Length: 116
Image (tube, rainbow, N blue to C red; front, side, top):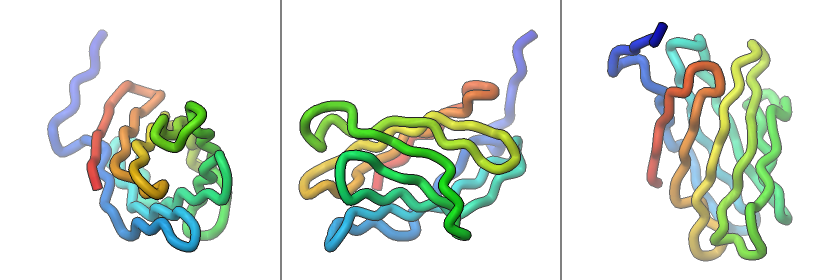
């Protein structure tokens, strides 16, 4: 049986902040009506791994760089307190600034691609 979702049930990501100096930090609002998630999530790094945290400081995942250079991007799994998990790919540009994000639900396969 295949589940079908209406267009308004997509995973929505809203950019709140994207900076690269003095440290790389991306802050987004993730809204998934199917999972009941509406959370502010930050992705920050000092070295080769992005750490994702909720607004209250709870760590929900780690996204290591996928290659030798930053241009390889970062990829990993984030898991919210309600148990829903998502695969996140960060596209990284010059100076380590995040250029885009691909987020995929590991529960039902819904995806969202966002360019910043």
